[in-house]
Length: 333
Ligand code: AMP
Ligand code: TRP
Image (cartoon, rainbow, N blue to C red; front, side, top):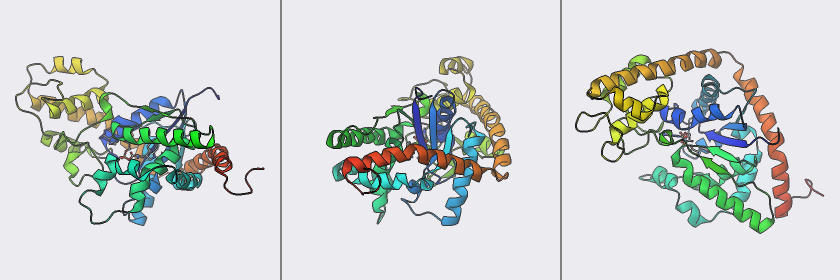
């Protein structure tokens, strides 16, 4: 048991989960649960770094938990829990805010993107990566499966962990990032230079996991393509079609080369129509399971059990951190 790799990852309950989240993160979560000791967190504390409606936030936490299970995460194999149910995240998050430097946080591209054009942003949005580092380091994590947009945060997590270990003595395992090749960055359907995101104001830019078959077909027919009619993978010259090929390949479990051959001499119309059907077939069973679970009332129990397991694993790390730093007087002798 103790030989198994510890895996940790998290998703914010801040909107409808997209196909990008699924192909870039959730699919890997499912694959890892058979071999690793996996912790999958719903990072609600991260979601409040930007304004959230309280009623909606609570609903979205339950939506996301139901989706975790609907895509195939098994609460008997993985630990599924909500970040704010385990207070050690906030506690370690504070300590790590006192380790990370302002300059390091200023360089984070996700912060720059999210802050761009806003009159004011919360301090929490700025210090967000320190909380993320706490999420990961708390569990002595070996591997973090994420999309490419999180790579920079992972590098910072390692830097923070390493700095802590050097300053206070060996405390944290330094985690590795686990990226999926093509799935690591699924781009928008309306603009292949931007990543597909649940927070994009244009719903046509993304496929959501709960989209109806008709919505999927409509969105696919409107998805932008490139000049000429060739279905060929070439991210530089043909970014839109390459993105659609990546989505097709990951969803149908066919290689890009096979797909290129299949669509040789055919136009974009056939290709996009077939892709829409592949997506409908991929998402329909997930949506069916989702509806059953979301309405069953068992989700709270699953999250409670998950939080209890997470607390047990997080506690020794937090105690050690406090001891190393010289905090408190009751947790250590
Ligand atoms: P977020 O939606 O920002 O909470 O992201 C949750 C997880 O999904 C992270 O691991 C992201 O890297 C991944 N992810 C989000 N959007 C995409 C995308 N367009 N392509 C691939 N992975 C993504
Ligand atoms: N920052 C991640 C995102 O926006 C979410 C996240 C928070 C996370 N804590 C994490 C991902 C820990 C992996 C591990 O997608």
